[in-house]
View 1 (cartoon, rainbow, N blue to C red):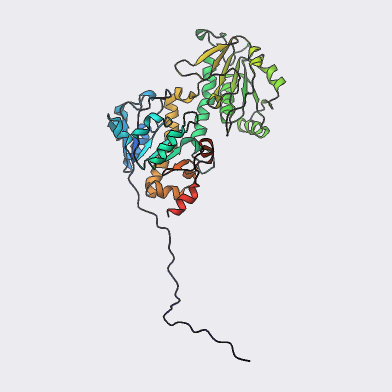
View 2: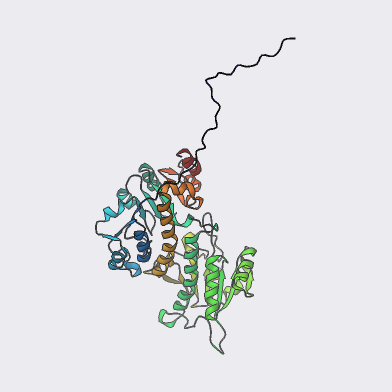
Length: 405
């Protein structure tokens, strides 16, 4: 029996421990940020307030803002100039900044102003989004980030939450305004005083908007009843407020009975995909008390009242079946200064971190929360639902950034 042959190892081959390749954090980058003046959607907000601009400038970044961009929320050019921003009178110059932050959605009319390889942060308004817009953004290899999709470390959507808080609180203030005689209302004080039964408020939806509408209504002294089909949300609402509330699942007969005797009805339902379902039929609205008020906060997704039709801040109300309807999609723009401060509180720390990480490309690799807001990356559409809607090619964002490392 022959012995097994021992393999001969080539002496030129060296088996040595190789050095491990580690990720080296790049040096900080200097950002150039442009903020245009919004002219559509009756938008009064500005994405960065002067205080936030001052922090960015002190950290070595450059901010260009179009003249009168903060006019709608009572910030003057002087306020921004003193904060360190460059006031620009040439609109095209602002749109050429590598990073552009808009407080209104991207429109087709702006496409010619965008530059190749730009990064744009703005709201994503599905109703105004078109296939041509997406194709032109793709052609210019632009990266787009939606305010509504940005997450924080707790897994929530900070800008959506703050806007919902404002909309919920504002809905009660608006209702009180249209119950007054000066606006042809019933002449009822929202809330109540000693010896007079409190105003009755119905709130449909126990999310963030509903919660803050409840908080404001209770603070004013109103009697509040909440409807939602999600029992967990109803429990959470009671736990958050620390009081026992009148709650119910959305059962048509019970809802119709309560609507007949209320002064204010607030639609605060949300829908993650598609249109908000219609919960209140026209017949239910017709049976409501004359002079009562409907505030349909969910109108930006179609509304949950069958009689709801979108209105504007210039003409916010109409009357149908003797019931006042307030159906403004961008309620927060009516409280622009508070809304601008809330948006700025989210964006400013994120921009500082992007600069510290060495730029957007480095930050998107390191931060999964930023990736959640990206729906187009360097011309590649990375949002599956948008790609399905417009029959465009979808590309996974994680694969894209991994292939570029």
